[in-house]
Amino acid sequence: MKLVKGAASPARDSQRVVSRADAVAVMIASSATAVATTALTVAGIIGFFTGPVTLTLPLSTTQLAPDGLRLGAEAHFTAVEAAIPALPAGEAVLLAWAGALNHVGILAVLALLFLLAFRLKGENLFTAGSVWIIGTCGAVLAVAGSVGQVLDQVARNRLAEAIGVNARTAEAGISFVGHFNFAPAVAGFVLILVAGVFQFGRRLQKDTEGLV
Image 1 (cartoon, rainbow, N blue to C red):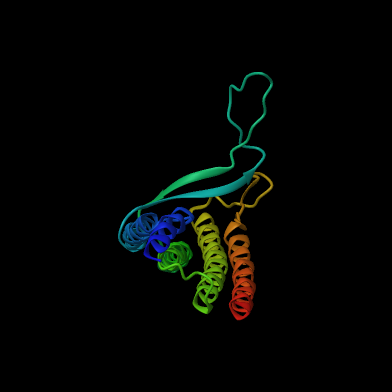
Image 2: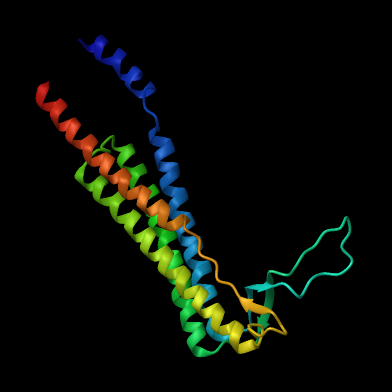
């Protein structure tokens, strides 16, 4: 009996999709990334209130174009990089909240990686906790990522107005154009669907255990 048990153990380890060492490595990497990105986000938020800030403001213009283009090419400027010595308080607060919410979305993804690696390490993936973790991280990513983008674009639009690059006149033909990235919302929705798949897998696992 001992020989059979010992022979089955290596076969079981060889069938692991993620080894214990790999799971631990993912946990360490996600934790280190969370610490590093949090430090950068905090530094960026402090910079909105304390020092000069350089922001890229997307614009729509058809009259301002680069000169000297070749091959019959036509082009126009789509953004301006503005160095502002001190941001107005309202815009600084909006940008700070935007940065914080966007970072919350990043932390949600990193937390998901950490917790799933932890579950894989213990070979206990299809649980009620895993379903809750995946669904919650997906909802946080979708909401935080979307709201953060909206706040960021509102702040940049107001700054474009304040510094005078958002003229909105027929002569200048320049106006601010906000950009919205649907990737966080789509990724969050996909994670919520994955949580549903995990819930279904958990039910199948229970049914299988009941048949054994």
